[in-house]
Image 1: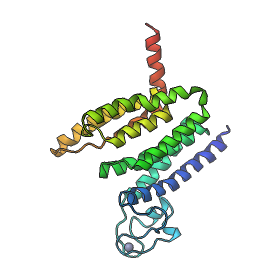
Image 2: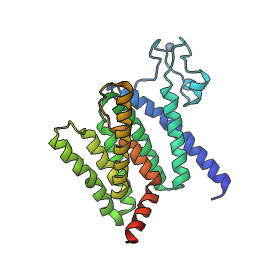
Image 3: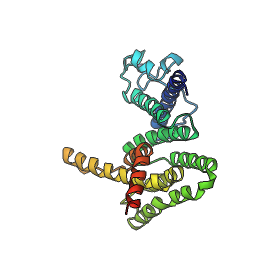
Image 4: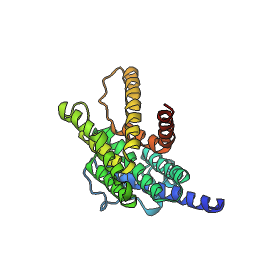
Length: 255
Ligand SMILES: [Zn+2]
């Protein structure tokens, strides 16, 4: 692909990424409150000023208004532009890594779902079922486009999640949340068993290290929301898993 075309498509990925990112903000805000995500128009939390189209341009409106409501000057959370920028940047990175492919599109939507569910899980300790269903559907698309390897994905669906379900069942949901079990089932169908297993291991390492640091720093007992860590683990696996898996396979082969 010529470089100029790469740049144009890359820019398109980034722009669509920030637009979807601004939709993620709506989901993050409204799903935990059980508000309708489609009907109600966006408004200022303080003065109820209804945002106009020019207030709703992802990233740029916030920067232009310097994070304040146009009417009453109420501060608008920096979380909005951060989510938008993160989503745009990762969509671009995924395009750079996987090119113009079905894989790229699936991973872009996966990243967006993981980002939103992570923020919600971090705040509410719950992963809304809709996100897991969405990721499962992405997984079904993956299997449909690579149906010769269906078994590889189906093993992904059950391998990590079965073990987690047992832990969930034995601990009566105290050791791990039901949402985490479903998440690892859905990502397993999308990634295949080896990448999913690797993502799970990364997630556990990240989760325990950061959790211990947080408890040390704040000297308080934190409830651990696993969603953000599992999500980060899955994304790390998508980006670097290929190298680790082939390295491991070569290691096994040399014996
Ligand atoms: Zn206002």
